[in-house]
Length: 297
Image 1 (cartoon, rainbow, N blue to C red):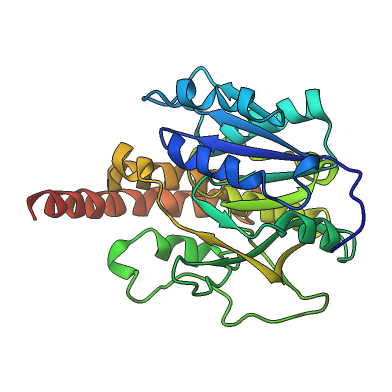
Image 2 (tube, rainbow, N blue to C red):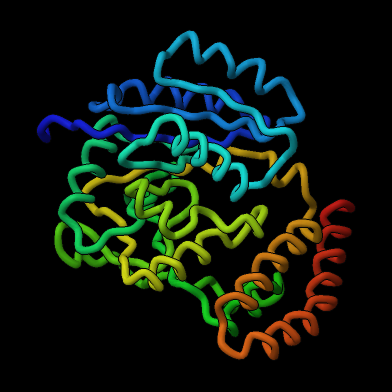
C-alpha cells in the first residue's frame, strides 16, 4: 500500500449507446483503493438511445460523478476533449485518465499508476498491460512507417501484415516498458503533460488518435510506458462502432486520419498524400466487395 495521495485524478469515460457498460465501470471504480481522489466525468456522445437518461442518476448515486452530454456525436477525439476541457475548467486534477467503458481493472490500479508516474523517466502517457478476456497479453504496437500505413489499409494484405507490434514484453526498469503507442482504451497522464501536447487531435473521429499522441510525445522528448506489474482486461464488448458503420465507411474515417497524420508529421508529405489518394479507390473497392459478401453470407 502506498502512502497518502493528495492529488485529484480526473477520469473521462466516453459513452455512445452502451450505458450498461458505463454504469458497471463507474460502480467498479468506486472500489479503487484511492477512489476518494477520483472525479469521474461521463461524456455521453449524443447517443441514439436513452443513455443520457440512464446515466444521469449516477450523479445522485455517487458524489464523485458528473454526467455530460454533447450536442452531436463528436467521435473519440473531440468527445474525450469535451470531458478533458470540463476537468481543466472545473476540477483541475493533477492526473487524468481516459477509459473505455468495456475494460475491467484491479482495485489497486490507480494507486499503482500514481506511484509509477512519480518514478519513471520523463513520463507522458502510461497504462497497465492490456490483456484479453481469456488473460492473454496483447502486445503493444509500434508507430507505423508510411509503407506500413499503406499495407494496413488492405484487408487482402492483412494475412501478410499483422500489424507493427513489439515482439515481446521487456522490463526496461521500474517494471515498465517504453513504447510508442498507448492504446486509446486506457491512458493515464499528468494533466499538465497531456494539456501540453494538446489533448487529442480534433481532426480525427474514430481512428489513429494514438499515433498523433505518440508523435507529440516524442516531439516533447517525453516517454510512453506500459506497466508490467498491473494489467487490465479490454473486453471489446462495445458493438456500436460496427453497427453504426460498415467496413467501407470505417475505412473512409481511417483514411482521413492517416491522411491528416501524413500532412502534419511525415517528411515529403505532399508526395505521400498523393500516394494515399492513388490507392484510396482500390482500398474502397475492396471494402465494398467485402461488405457485399458479408451481407449475402
